[in-house]
Amino acid sequence: MIFKPSIEDQDFNHVDFTINLLNGREYENCTFNHCNFSELNLSNIDFIDCNFDNCNLSNIKINDIVFREILFTECKMIGVDFSNIKQLVLSIEFNNCCLNFCTFEGLSLKSTNFKSCSLNETDFTNCDLSSSDFEKSDLYRAIFYNTILIQADFSSATNYIIDPEFNRLKKAKFSLDGLVGLLDKYEIEVI
Image (cartoon, rainbow, N blue to C red; front, side, top):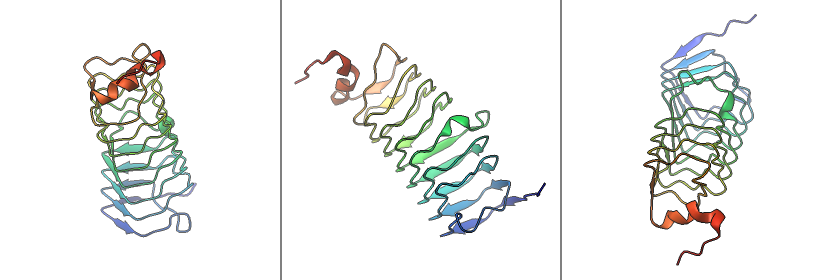
């Protein structure tokens, strides 16, 4: 068995990790700026108090990964399946990220920020998104089924369709324009 060290307080700039493989088991208080992780298997790696800025993390594999106090800013994360990450210490935030075709199925994502994100065709089935904020995010064809959206904020989000009969929406916030997304299945014309 090869031992991989814990790496702390490092800045990684413009590193293509598809060529220069990650050599740590745990990354704490690290910053990844303009790095490429595309299609890598990052399973069983712990990221604690890390920032990812302008990184490509599309189609990464993240089984049993730890994301604790992680900020993703302007990252491309297309097709990532988050459903098998370690939930016990999960704490993530997304700002201006492309999260199209991702899966968050079954996760507890209470108070998670998805600010100015593209979440096209992203799956939130069986998630707890209580008090989460979707500020200025595009939720075109995002899937909400059996999702807890209590006090979630969709007031500036766009293109969502959420069925109130199959999701818990108590005290969730929606704009007047966004109410159409709650009535879609009834084929009602709002003028």
